[in-house]
Image 1 (cartoon, rainbow, N blue to C red):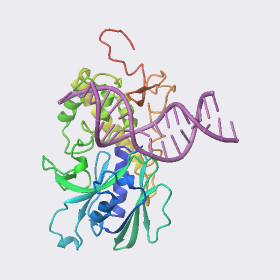
Image 2: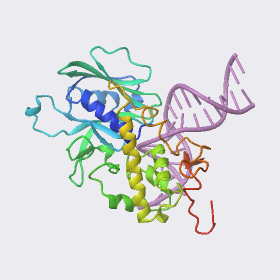
Image 3: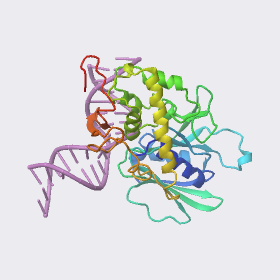
Image 4: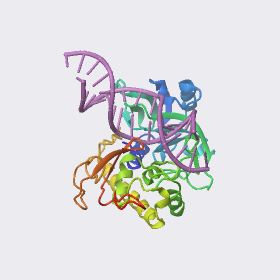
Length: 314
DNA sequence: AGTAGCACCTGATTGC
DNA sequence: TGCAATCAGGTGCTAC
């Protein structure tokens, strides 16, 4: 599933293929893919028509293209005020065609026709399970005046991203802030990792991987996580994502800007996720899998001890 | 305020 | 064989 490393791979692909292009035409094949657009597909298309994709920016799993008015780059005086935002949900993919595009794929939810100096291109948004979306919306300034995300120095984020925390690989993120937020409340630590308002970019797979690496039980109450443990956990989150990024970035077709979670990192290098019953590579104990808070959760009961102030063991 | 739970949706897989 | 139940997942909303 697309988590931070996969979305970053998509972002860099799109940065090279569609940034600088002008939107010539917008077609929505499935209106629910623009369900966040108050005025529906009509408004979506109208706000995009004729605008230039000025950059490809990412915060956590959220992706957007600031929209500039048409005109040569050096003529543009105003900073972008709007953006085309995208979230890939669990199965969203972008595909770019150069020249003439084929008939849209069965899972294609929207098609954006582009004009570029290299000729026409087509940007397709595919999404089998339809949890993803596109929306054209207004940019809002960041409170700290720092860049809103990876891929642009613009200190702004789209409206739908204002409540999303900076991600674990954001150089403007405050470690102390993230550590403090990870330790607050009664929820299990895994739920904090998945809470995109605490630190963004982490999904179910990397949450399990980071907890395994940090030897923390997913259900340890946040308030029972020490500052040192939270810091170590954040380090593990970064390590696992950087490793995934290094692998995911090498193995995708440039024009099929692939976010299929099964590409790259997914099936190769996982220590906990999807390994129920298999031996823990650290201690040899069997990896356990259980549904926790509605999500499949994988951990090593020997390495990741349950927090139990009274009962002696899990 | 913080937390829990459900809706959203499709296709693959499993069960009867 | 055919149909129904189950599962996978992230986010946004509602309800306590």
